[in-house]
Image (cartoon, rainbow over all chains, first blue to last red; front, side, top):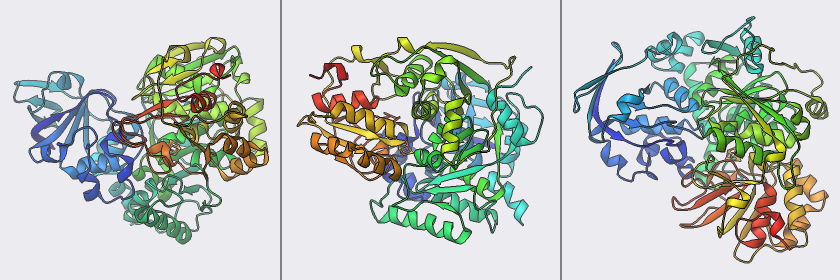
Length: 163
Length: 420
Ligand code: SF4
């Protein structure tokens, strides 16, 4: 699996309340949620994802509420992968469970600027910042999580039990 | 190498002798919880699994509490999805308006969670039940769906941080101040992926309501769960709420902790978390002059009977400042009735406060007290993120119920000591 694209970069402690504010949680329609993704932090986000497909952020990304609407809205907005210094745990498992790729790689985040181009290779475990011409190694996921990702999320994996 | 309290509960539910930090296990569930925001998503995913029935009709709790009583048509549609699913699947613990309460106050009160249980909930504050010596943690809707279908959850076994509590609370200091103090000390990701385990002779000073408040906010330090050692108070609470049989787990002597903190309750002061993170704490003597517009007393953090009593004791015979809207929300129907019977509502209403039926309401910026641009609110809730209670340029200050009540009287963040 590979992902390549321009990055949009944010800071530390991006919580799920700003990713998708509660006032929009009276719906669970991914398309509607995507329209409001990140708007309390960055009103230009929906415009930006037309050209950026990788989100980069600091520590503790996705902290706060467990709303799966947060990773759903990010995925639906067109973001292919999130690279952060670290993730809050509920967000981390929600992203894995819905098949949204996420990577923690503090150094790649530290050295990246908004608008740089990343190319990520999940199979050989690397992030290349093409703009800065630098390569970073990424940790492989634990075996179970790899399996969830390979099967494109937890639901497809569980489905087999019931068919 | 021994196991922590959390690791023992996880091992028992994974059917193995031993687990160690970092390992991924499949654990059996005692309870799966969802609310009106997370359940509709979970129900959609549940249907995709192909399951035709839930794993156990008694071990799922569905609580419409966030936007209820339904604030608009879309919210009504969401609750309708839940209600119909509950009916179709024969889910016993669906709580309709009139019986419902804020989920994390409701489940312990109904005796649905107990010591030694393993509980997941599609709500981040599911960690509240750690107060009872259970392992409980917040997950997303997909986990909830899979939990409802299979009765299992995948979990990475966490490391733990131990908090050894000693001493006694001073006046106007309670569980809220202790947990705010801890979050201020270790930060909003200070316990990320880890368990927070509470022990020490000071636990006997903590009422069950204090413990619920503390475990509730473990997530605000990023923790996977917060768990209290079971003692006489826990046992009493469990029996009183219909649980005679439960399992107590104690950490092994040689359990590994990533860090151990000792906290002397005597040293704590009323503590307030400033915008926009729960870690931005100041003690009451450091807050300075912060003029406010609203006070909210309620939520799964501090909407229990003790909180109502504490707020009422401060408001008794006093008036809410004319510049303040003071909203009091008992967290469950039972707490509501108890408050009414104890005469607390007379005190609130005489003071000029509004009393609401149980709901999450303003806590998440849902309804019943949304803030306008530039407004400030002192709330007994658990989160003060940007825009949490309304406009992106509004501010939330987290405090205990007595500080919140005193602030309602003065119109600025205040200690009850400042009142005449
Ligand atoms: S009261 Fe607030 S924190 Fe608690 S469950 Fe409701 S919205 Fe969440």
